[in-house]
Image (cartoon, rainbow, N blue to C red; front, side):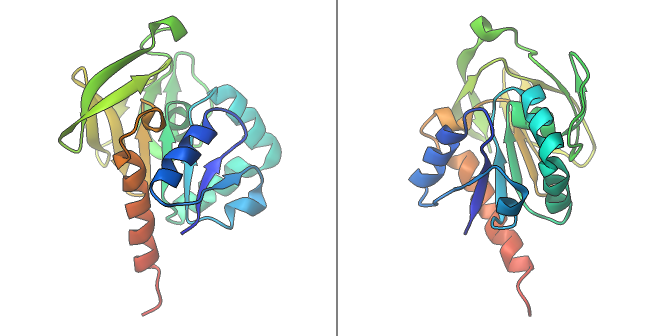
Length: 194
């Protein structure tokens, strides 16, 4: 199984360590050609406007959009969730438009307002790290909520697109990354010739 991590900016190395703890060697994706080598992708936290500039300049944004629309599982955390959303507020910006959601940038405040709290993920407690975190302001009817914190949705899924407002790679709980690996295994089974 080849799992890619968009490695142009942000905390991609922490995601790589989280995947290694689950027995997966990640592929650091910086070019469109590398995207063809992976069956799933992580879009990490970082600065979403910086990501957009790179993705637009390199054509990688179009390639990611095509791959995800073709069924490749993707996980976006924090800035990655912003990039996946169909609509972005505070302020408005472009995105990949792959998740039927409105995301509000920096909804919990500035860097100094970052916090760690306990929420729930798939009905079980989980420690969650929020750093200049976005909020899911609106969700489309096909978007399921898999995680909550402070009575707000913080992790959602729509088919093969998963997005979290927090940073699962900064904790020791591997369930978020395992969910991505499970989605990749499921998609590989569905695409196997019969």
